[in-house]
Image (cartoon, rainbow, N blue to C red):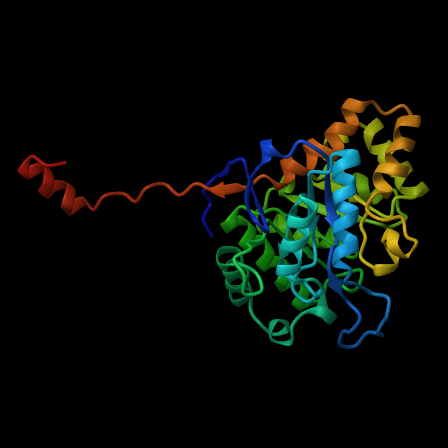
Length: 328
């Protein structure tokens, strides 16, 4: 594994091409699903509501948020095994005029392709790098994030550990950030850190009830992404802000089911803007801090960090020969 330093650039890979971070002026939703299908998996009960396939309704919500609240970018974390559809995401981005970042990576055991459950880390890493370099689902759309990777239990299985290790190695090779699911988030973060991935390249979702968990994530140097934005999440957000960790906080609506979009009576992607941010303002959080959380932080996490590869040293024999002829 190369130890070359990470060099920060300013590009974000979206489903419709590279996007300069400076071109994203509005808010960013860093953990969403625009199209997913988790209804069927091996060894777990099916759930007929665990899906989202409403392209026009989703595009309409994003388009309205762009107009009303300046929404600039959405990170779509439906990766391998979650019903990802790069073509649909490209159409949603074009229709809504909101940039969309897609993900690669293996989600969690029951939703992992059967071949990947027994694959070694090198094979898994090569597969991820192929998607990163060549595109998703047979398209030219390249991912801008690895995730969301996950564990189906509180602790990752050996297969899930290999998938997390592959995610870390692919991230180190490509410069992409990594996002983890909240279940098993801290153990997964430890695996990523153990592979040498810098903590500030990691976002860990937290939808649990233990207020200590978000604090642990930010103290390790990672980003905590709060979703399921109710009273508990408001407390967690305020605790982190008051403790001086606003620069490590991400907020997103976290939709993943069709019942959660506005068309079917859910809070929709606007829940963050209509409900949660007003509560932060009522609690005394400044506009500057809110801008940091919903704009600066996700762009800082997403911004591509590529490995610097020094030029190859010239062959010693060739140098001596050139010097002898007066050529350099």
